[in-house]
Image 1 (tube, one colour):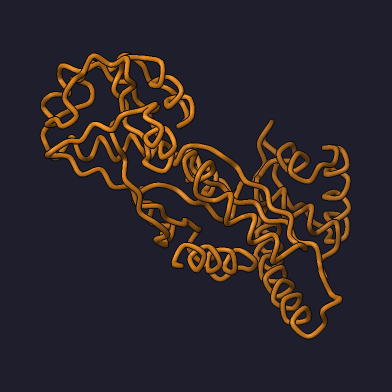
Image 2 (tube, rainbow, N blue to C red; image 1 turned 45 degrees about the vertical axis):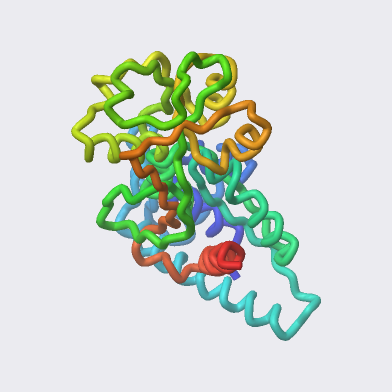
Length: 299
């Protein structure tokens, strides 16, 4: 089993930050430094190079980190196999995953609830950011599994399909627009409220408009808002047209609080994908969570 010192080292090495490691481990930064120093004394070598507020692994640190990752995977496999033959064995595991805003709000909560009911020994932390920042968190080793909208074409990341969802144009009853079916060119004359840069929803809209030779920079965008809920709440009381995930506005469309505006020449479909750093696809318990989520939504 990995010692407490090695678990702390792994977290510092994963995040390349003593401060961030102390926050995720819920211990003081001085306690983190003390445990890392004890390891350096044990191995008779430095494990981190320190550059002001940043750190990097030394050659010895990289060797230790890679071997501990292998050891942690073996530990997960051992726990799983022992648990299958001993119902009283229930080791505590901590998973850190990230998901884009829409997924965090509307897609993943019921899956997490079902998964934790089945796996009560797991503590799960969910980071909620836009797709671009979830990808960054994965590359920065802040998370080991992400769920984002679309594919951002990063060579050292694997993408596993999960779901598809529509993006729909919606307006409130205050909007003076009378037609509920438009063409893309009509957007040149309609005030818009859009998501912020880096949003997967915005990326889908940009791609669809580009196919019609329309740039968002040329449209009358009145406001950009960070987050699905912020945009939805804004358009409910404003006269702008907004583009939102269908899953986010099901209730509002059913109640008539928002009205869907269809486009004859725009197909707005989002694809949700799991993302992992290449080489980590078989790491437990994340592999189990991916398989569980895919089964959950295949029903």
